[in-house]
Length: 557
Image 1 (cartoon, rainbow, N blue to C red):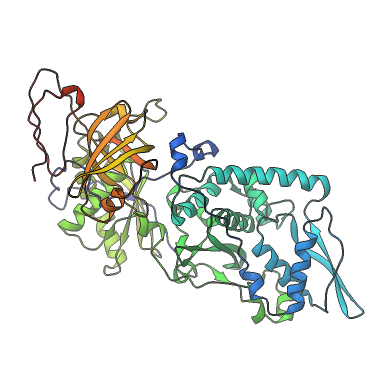
Image 2: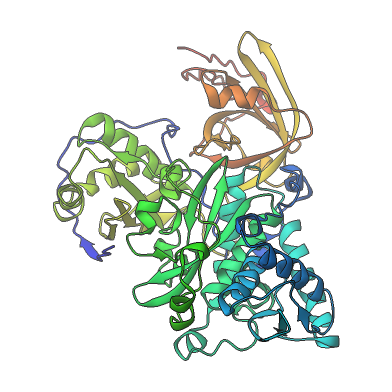
């Protein structure tokens, strides 16, 4: 993978600017939830907690199921029993086992129990009278271990309790990735000096100490995914000539490769470079160790970097790759594709994103596309078109920087703002993303629905001519819906069912929490005592109850 930092020079637009849009098309990016510290994970209102119920935790046993030697399986069970004790006792195995066999039992147990953070990979053993005797090593024991367990469980509970706003497996998995990146730093000293004392190699290091190496990252990612009902396994392998660990996660029935350690980069734009990759993509830089059954005992004992795997799933799906979920695809340099990407860029600017990603389709030569976009300045077309759509409330600078990822065929543009209506740190934002409580969602005509949602903070800010971006579960892009009315903390959205997204909206029930970014658009004021003619396409009621005497015509196709 090659990543290049390139100055994007502002040049004269190479194509005709796109026409001004009244509101953003749904062909844009969804709201990006950026996490900076623990406080950002707390729901912003009671209604946000209604968004989703946490599914039952998944306790997987893929590693145990892969063991073929019954004596190793028995040792696995004995290890589980010893880990419930404050101090481990000597284990008498049911047969004679090699050093590789004992490692297999320990690795398998740790793979299936990422919550048992106190067991080490090291052990002592000897053979006597037809049996092997094994003594495990704990990182801590006795009262120290009990105290650590309390801290560990408290951190786990806090994490789970703040995950209620994520309804899909993909969203919960992304939350895990973001949480670890925000709350843990990579322990360079431990990694480079091969000093793995303490908890740097387990989930405790991530969740409590906030410092870990790759094994700790992988164990924590697996554990947190499991806690949110997502199947996940840890993978041991190599990157170059260095031992490494990462994960595979199962999202909506398909497995994906994830390396949260490598996602934890100082460069924020690359926080998802290793999020839900295929085998082909991941193995361009990683190599998984062989399965234990395929490793000769002598080779295992002589290779200090060789850990071994028991279960490595095939990962071939691209559906839930981060960029496939959030970024527009560049198919061609034509008006239709320009419009799609410009709309997505405008949405990204409204959200205040720092970066904007574009996927280059396989039908185009990646280097040629990158050259046209960045070096020839074609990306300026997208920025200028997006600025036209934004109407001055938000304005992007046409001079920026670009990064490229050849493996993922992704080009990332750094977004620099000349003007943004929301000042950072401002107590009262002009718009924000919040959970609105759904009060009603009634069909008032054939295919026409009247949705009323309540949020005392944002609803009163809405005015005529503005719109809201409604998040639809299982859909990447928010749906832009015009504001019909706003009164007493209740926002009224009247919409027509036109596709799959609005159909899902029409099925939302009273009491649900609806994730809405609002109010958006410039809007305008209506003075009392004057008569107005307001014209808009589709469902477009643009007047407030305070001005019922104003004449208003709306809904012209």
